[in-house]
Every structure is written in structure tokens, then in C-alpha cells.
Image (cartoon, rainbow, N blue to C red):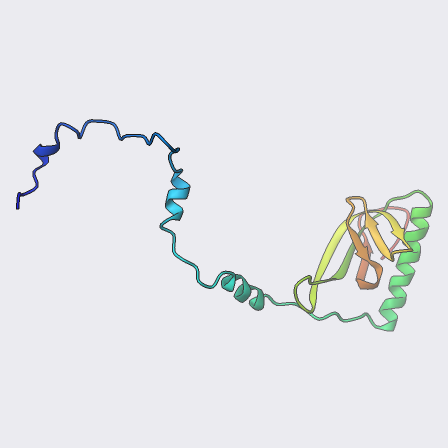
Length: 148
């Protein structure tokens, strides 16, 4: 058997790599995908990650807190009726889309209106907060109305 010698290929080593005539070159990304590992359990990692994510349970405000929220909503509604758009900060419970429970969120911004039909507080940026899920509400900044 003949031993390999680099001198045998000196005549073709300097030539450019030939391009295929009948089909385009494969992109580097597609070529790399051929060598990526096979995932037998597609979605398993996402399912494990989702099961590890914690949610909280909704705790309805007691009667005194509910009355205080009603009072603050009344003040807010009067301010909106007088043409004001007060800036408030609300803490509310947002239900989780994928599992039971949810999380407590805080939203601060100017209120556009209170939608009595859908029972939501609508902010200037378009975000809606269900009135029934509000736990705390306070006015931000100094304005004529008071929600504290």
C-alpha cells in the first residue's frame, strides 16, 4: 500500500472549492442543524419549567377592606366625571393562563375611565384591571381628589 504524501496533491490544493451546478449551496445554519443533537422528548424541558413555576392563591379582601376600596372607587369615579384623569397605583390579582392560581401585580398610571358594564378599570395605556380583583388602590402625586 502506498503511503500518503502531501506532495501528491500540490497541483490541486490551490484550486478554489467547486460550487455545485444543479442546486444552491446550503447555508451554514442549515448545515449546522444536521449535526445538532436529537431531542427525543420535545417539550419536556418546557413542561418541567412550567411545573416549577409558582403561583399564588387569590385572597379576597375582608369586608372592611372591600368597603374602603368602594369608597376610593367612588372618589375616583367623581374625579373622572369632573374631567380629571388621576394617576393611581393599584395592586390586583392576575389569574394565570396556564395553571391554577396567579400572581399579584402592581399597576401605576393615569386612569382613562371605569367601565361599569365590564367591571374594569381602564388606564390610558389601554391596560384593563378587573375591579373585583383589586386589593389596594392609592392616588399618586398631588391632585384635588384623594384616594388614600
